[in-house]
Length: 218
Image 1 (cartoon, rainbow, N blue to C red):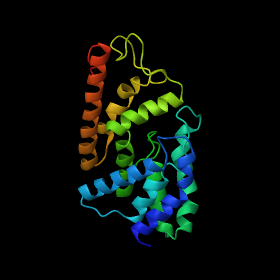
Image 2 (cartoon, rainbow, N blue to C red):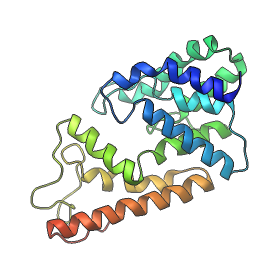
Image 3 (cartoon, rainbow, N blue to C red):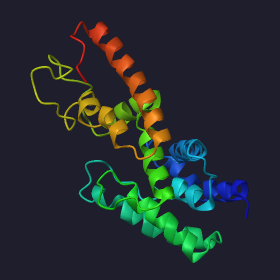
Image 4 (spheres, one colour):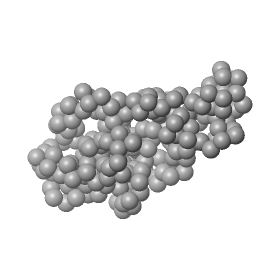
């Protein structure tokens, strides 16, 4: 099966995700992660593969809310659920094992270290989706779904308090998002991550001006 045909089959298999209500982990997110993965692969002088394609589309097959008690296990659960999907699509056992490892290792929990090129690329591709203009939109979408405030009413950029992203969406920029570029594993991923983090910092500067607040030091 060609990459184009396999991608179509994966999208058909995941079509139900579009109605799942989680705009941060829907089919469009899988499309973006695959686009990021291809860009990184080409930047590293590699050809995209079936393993990378399947890992990109199936990495969030089990998506749990950020406040779910089993959230840290979601990557492992996704890898397990992805196995039968890939088998039905005709992947060989060795390819399935490599894709499952990449899915397991993409988790932000860091429970499984990426030990293959596909795993390192997926690791970076997924994190790129949390950065840039899309990252800003996703941050506020997820925080809104969890009932969190946009920002602290008197200290939006946490100048005189510890950032708390369990209470304020904007604090997630300081707690996690702007730290992501330093965690990326490929040179291409790091370059793209820094570019997208710069977009987010420009947004924060614009927001600070609108609020009449001091610029954040993030």
